[in-house]
Structure formats: structure tokens, C-alpha cells
Image 1 (cartoon, rainbow, N blue to C red):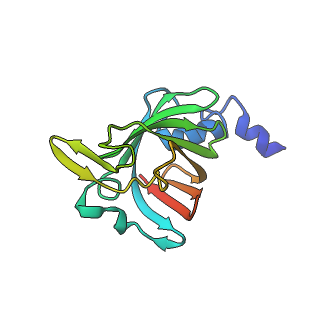
Image 2: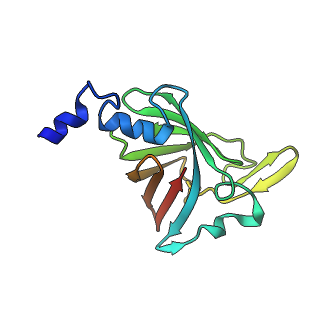
Length: 165
């Protein structure tokens, strides 16, 4: 009972467990707070596939980054995120146990993982959409600290994504 009281007490600047999770993920608790994450591991059915997603040397998730920005913090936080090729928007559960990722990108075709930037056609694996037919993708947040986020998705296969800043 004591630990519950300490984590939710208003006198602490952090504001409890949920506020700390928001700060860990976005770098702050106010709209517009933004943080950059870099892919450290992409695992499919226990096999490290991190280097395989960087097809054709496209500097997307592995060589570059994913920037996630808090848009609105209500019952479910809404956010925008972008990498070199992909742009996303979605929501995160109030408890920060799951994240819903929605495609918000101008792809060549719906099932394509390519995008034209400055008249150059870039293609890269969209790691957050292992099944491209889904309009949204829901992931469980299994770890969220200031420096690390681990996501898990059970689809036809087991997927784990580890991001660090």
C-alpha cells in the first residue's frame, strides 16, 4: 500500500507512474514533447533480423531513427511518429501497456513499403506492420524506461522490437 501511495502522490514532480512513463517515451509530459529512438534489435520468432530490415542500404530505422511526438494527453495519449520513410500516428493506452500504430503515410500503393522522396523511390521493411493487410497494428509495451523501449507483437509469428535513445 505504501508503494502505491508514493507512486501516485501529487507532491512528486514526476506525478506518478503514468507520468513517468509518458516522460520516458516522449521526453516530457506536455503536447509537443518529442524524443528520438534508434532501433537496436528486431527479432522474429527468436531470430535476430535487425540487419535484414535495412534492405538496399536505405537509412531508415536501423541507421537513422524514429522520432515520436506527443500530440494530446487525455485518456489515451495520441502521438505522431516518423522515420526516414514512414510516418505514423496512433494512440497509447493510459496505462502505457499497449501502443496502437496507424499508417499515416503517402505510399505508392496500399500494400507497398516504398515511398517517393525527391523523385527517388525508397523501399524499406515497415517493422511496425509485419502483416501489411492490417490498417492498424497493436503492440504490447513490455519494457519502458528512460533509455529503452521493448515492444512485442504476437501475429502469425512472434515479433520483438527494442529501441534505445
